[in-house]
Length: 169
Image 1 (cartoon, rainbow, N blue to C red):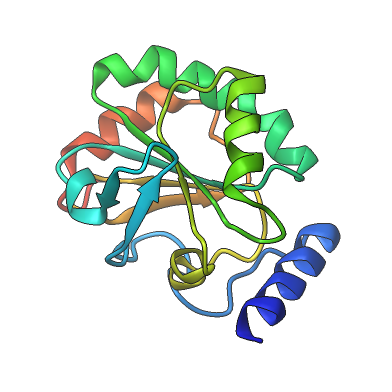
Image 2: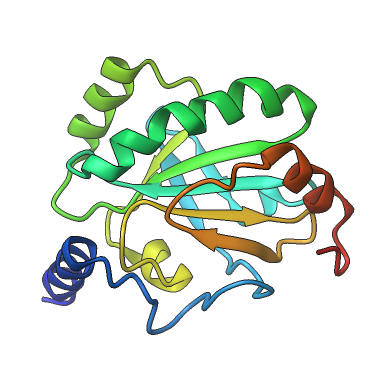
């Protein structure tokens, strides 16, 4: 029952653009909570695996038109900034979606960075995701420094700030 309520809330907030999270990571300067997910390849990935590097987390679904519109920008960031140390993980929120659709989406759009699936909406809820897409930029210490529906235009500058950690802004 909880998953259906979460799905309904996510859908309504996405449709009406009211993506203010009621709990979890509320905005910038909050610590990214612990999590553990399986990638679409079946590999376990945790928060601890991603710490120590600047991190781009993207919460998305296959049915979200804004997620598809933002995809070229995310792929560009992955291609240009991945070699400079930016870790990227896209997490399908799991709402009205399936692993099979996520895999087909990855193939259709030729996505090379890791994709994970949030089967029970637990990680998405813990982070406070109530609309997709939601982009988080996290510094090397695990502190969320940016939370918006779209990537910032100045990703190169963000990468420099995220790499400093310990209160960098």
